[in-house]
Length: 362
Image: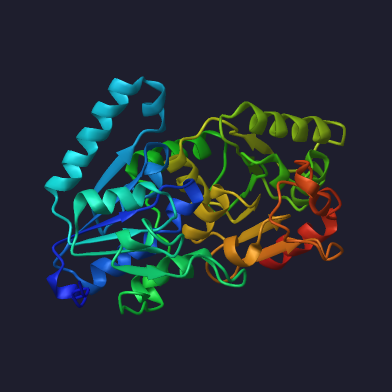
């Protein structure tokens, strides 16, 4: 049967799904904004994993946020089945006119067949069941020179909608509770907004991380300029261990003229957003906190190794990307050299090169 012509004025409810990691979910926020602008009469919902919810909670254009808990599969088949059925029942009760599926997660094809919206769009993936599940398809990320934000917006371009510059803004809302806690933490430690550098050197993927000794040298150089340092990481043991190694390396040097506040493992995601919004500069690797800093309007120095900086760099103007200029093999997209979990392009990246980028933004 021919596909019904897409009509934004006909939309009553839309579901945007992004079943990926934190940074991926945050970079999907412009799709929600654009849908609400072009169809202000409709309610825009989102579906994401529960641990990534803070990336979208509070988005001014979002009506409802539905969540999938990754732990469901560990609770036994009956509990998982009950949770899945409850979610599907909730989604079906919303009677969506459009489903925008922003990944190649196979759940999207099943979801569209169960929800039966008038229109549905997803990346081109495999022929057959996948392709036949959606009314519209858009090219999956195939151009390493295009940013992920633009690829996400291709979903709406496939429906005949063209984004404006304002639509492309990534939105992250820390919330009053997070703002209050961070304000109290900074005041207690004698730090003011715009008066410190936020350094987040860790990632869940070790092959994306700059060596601790080089992070320490950079922190010492910034502190020598009188800039207090606030260091953060996730509560993950490996990430906290990296921060510990940085502290050990710095401890071998003379006491810096500016203080360092270690908040590693102590902040919720919303609090991390509130903190980075108050920083004079953010320095970090390819990770969700880097995307969060850019979304909050903080100047970012992003250190990249094997991952593609054109696709995943800090979104917006006024940021700096630092990557090896002696490794023509990057970005290789591998988990370290030959998937070894160790990236030579990061291990050899000079401190002076990163410091120069910081000085440009300072």
